Amino acid sequence: MKLENKVAIITGSSRGIGKETAILFAKEGASVIIVNDKNVEEGKETSNYIKEIGAESSYFNCDVSNKEQVKEMIADISNNYGKIDILINNAGVISDNFLVNMNDEDWDKVINVNLKGVFNCSRFTAKYMIKQGSGVILNTASIVGIYGNIGQTNYAASKFGVIGLTKTWAKELGPKGIRVNAVAPGFTKTEMISKIPKKITENVIKKTPLKRLGEPIDIACAYLFLASDEASFINGAVLSVDGGLVLG
Image 1 (cartoon, helix red, strand yellow):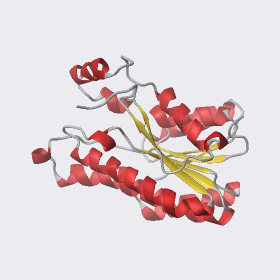
Image 2 (cartoon, helix red, strand yellow):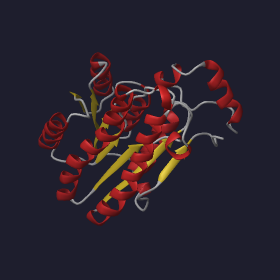
Image 3 (cartoon, one colour):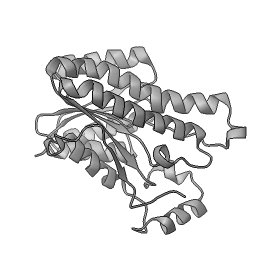
Image 4 (cartoon, helix red, strand yellow):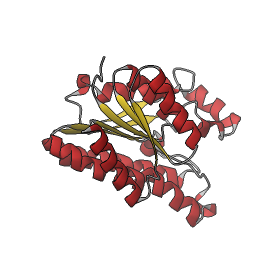
């Protein structure tokens, strides 16, 4: 198994890509910590399912944008498990609008979760990883964070920011034995995508060389590779998993 005896924290893992990643990691031998502050019952169900298939798991109800909650959670996980091998900053939200119509609430909500949440989880986890001399931090970017996208000023800004954090931390933490990489999913079949008008998703499929949307397992497999020892010399990379889509 690729992640045998590893301890992995995955934020936003009650559904979608995060849930698929959590289950895959568990099947590959990891103890998986499920983290979210919405859909609490779904988070607990995911953790219980992982236990049912024979892996170790626990659930934390934590708002990643809340510094004190994150600090306490990371400390508890380190104390309970004795180490933290992998952190996946997967929690994310959207609140789309055109620039001239976007209000402060739309902006702050997305930046606080998608960018500040990544900062909070990583800064506290990194301290423990530095002490143990090893670790992997994986950040969820997006192709929108590479190419931009109409109507997603806040989301694009947050994901451009995540890419910047990834490359900076790869340089800072690499000498400490910690690898930091990002995955940039394309349009993937999740609840988030279900909110996009069908006409737009159909157009995306037409522009994608593989002629389909991504599945959560497609992204989960990318996380698995980057978290594993097979990617031991990959640091500061942004892996696009988008079927070849290039936004025009």
